[in-house]
Image (tube, rainbow, N blue to C red; front, side, top):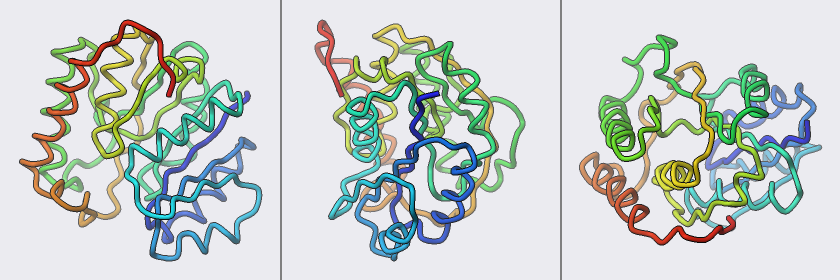
Length: 236
């Protein structure tokens, strides 16, 4: 399979080396997008061979790293692209489940809540509550019947990514992606992934650390995307 594994990273020195070692077992191309890390992640990556690397001189946001990954996958003519986080929440041994399914779909999305596959008590309560509330609102709009609208462990057909116009640089980008996928009529499947929370103290940063502000921001992303013109095909 002509597949690219993409790893967005921001201050992930603790996990990044071990994760890449495990991902390399699958003999797929690996792209790391370092989003302006300041904890030594960049220095760690400079010592790792046989990876492709995009380095942002400053932190540009989670959505920006994913959009950069999509652009790279399109420009380099990959057939499939997998995204997974670098903070130990996604297990490399689950990659084959995505690769098995993606030839039949446009997006295969991991869900931490599709089955009883983890311990929800490890999740900060506001994150679980907001994910659930936003996922329900998204489903009412799209009828996609998702169970987890924010899981970063996904596989995509690159041909489908070419049809999208993603512009949101921050954490709300997945909501923009889902609404565009719905409008484009993409074939989507959720598959269960392990629910792992290694660091319940991890923050979004700035105003988004406030749950009410974050909820308002997510709703604004959906409202804005629903109001956009979508009559023509666009590219990432």
